Image (cartoon, rainbow, N blue to C red):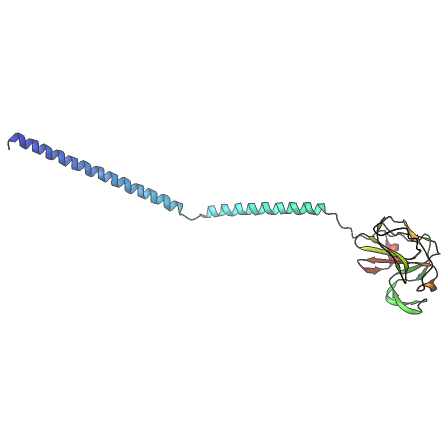
Length: 232
């Protein structure tokens, strides 16, 4: 091999070595970038898998509390509307007037705590009503505004009328003539004529002509004379 050929062979060797170094450099760069990307990707994954922080938890709790507060507020508004829509129940005592005009004599008093003498039955007994002396044909009037609850004929009290005054109070008028002026379900006003006094039944004949007047509150007997005196 002459000198010229030797020079050419060395040049090729140098070029080959340079190419090898270039390839090594490129390979190292690619490997570095891949490793860097892998680290970056792992960081993102790690960040995604991090638990909720205390600040984030507080924000969630606040949001839940706000939602609960809105729900309670809505419920309160609804309940207020429903309460306003329902009419208030009146439990006050009605203003009772006497069912008979003028002064009347009590011929058999109200007494539920001890027995009193009944001249017709000729025995002592309790009495949950009051009997007021009145001539036959005397007008009997409603003691207060109300609705007629019952009209019937009773063996002891004769024809009687019961009037409901709201949900709590009830008045009863007995010993009425057959021509009762009201009917069940009818609304009546205080002082309205509901009938007239009739002759007494055999269970009250010794008392003379009279009106039986009774009063109840929630089913419990009340003294009509006291309620009329204390009515405002």
